[in-house]
Image 1 (tube, rainbow, N blue to C red):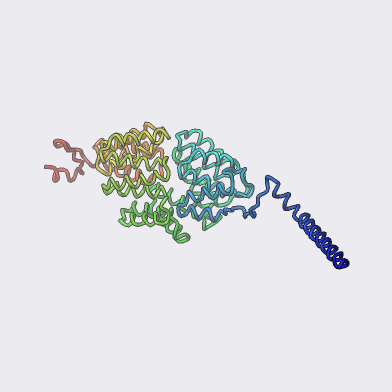
Image 2: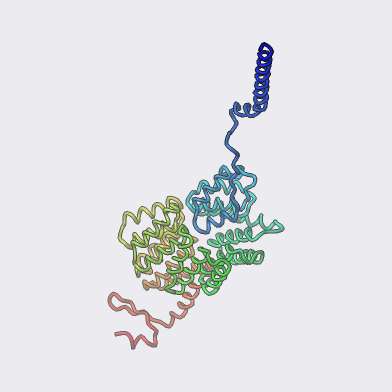
Length: 437
């Protein structure tokens, strides 16, 4: 029994030693993990892959108007600045800044554009912001410097050529010789990349602006052949159809908004169509939707002001006028828009007055001079009207509408004016005796 007892005790002791050794080994093995747990910087959760955002993903979001989603995703991969990520391509940063611009976050957009001093599209974006605040002199200086710097580069891609075209087009607002340069730059972009839809759209918009609708419509259709779901291309086509008084213009712009419901320019154009058909409430609603997307959209504010003017809502009209001028005290397009809408409603006296106000804001508003001249002719102020049209054509000889009207006035020598009560008749000399009472 004594021997058994000794063996039992030895076994128990050995077992305890074994257990102690096992615990010691486990403790030693756990030391690195324990050290991590005691480290205040240790994160016990498994590392998550860093968020990413590619240029194609960002462009897809912009195409359907998911602006807020893009802003959130971009901020997730950067701290909102160029310095926030080395991997962020300038094209992606530019797109982010453009969306900030589109949604009225102008200070943020300006800061981001400024952080890309060597990227031509960003320099154009910065100049456009300056121009749209009314500081056209500073903007012109920066735009000409941009074009001069670009001329020293050996190679340019389609995106850069398009930015140069936009810069030249903006300069053309005061010096029309730049319009032909803009066309050359857009064509250079398309030579570089036939699928450069932004260049094609910009070219179409310029052609339509200069009343060359036949070519403009072809350009928009070519863009849609390459990108059938491009909301901006559909908007361009809708404007072209409207130029030809085609009734399908409204359907086309609504298709554009089905693809991108946040396309501010499409909302403004639809508001214009409603206004022209005297659906004032619908026009105001569309302008309001545009302003919810971009509270600083001057075209939307101008269009809504026109709707309030036609609705005799004077206080709201004045509020929108002041809102526009507070942001850009030289925004002649406010009064040009009012003049055009007034003339469409046969309010020629008011239209002429608005056109004069446009010229007062910007003496180089050739559109303002043209609108003044057209409405002076409608009011029977023939000599003054011709003088205004000649001033408009001198400033912008590429405006086909003004040229054709001036050609018409050349035949006025064959007409005579006859007053009859409140009416003034302008009739051809060979027909006046027959037609007058």
